[in-house]
Image (cartoon, rainbow, N blue to C red):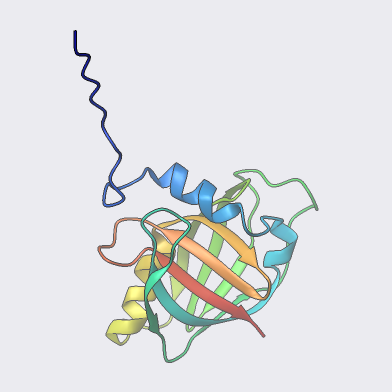
Length: 155
């Protein structure tokens, strides 16, 4: 009598859930919201399919994200607001829980920026989670093909 066993291997090309990618990213870094405070240079776009391997890194020519203050330490709820500035835009963190982050644009003094600036704005509008590794901030975002990481470096 012969017994056949068949299995199914998961393919690395399968897309993982945003939750799993976000979890994998956070394993090698810190997610303390107080570490977000400061000045960050926007340096690169990249892609990760699994939250472990980063590829397709594209250097950006400029831009700065400023996070000047935080709400009551260790109490971060949906109603808490942080003011962020990027180019001539003002952003607020409207949700921060664990490493999940949701940014919302609240105002701007420009009509249309260069294509690179528009891509950065789109990434921030679709932010999902963050992790800080050393002096770099990784913002994982969704809804953009071939890019899902915005990488910033602390000044």
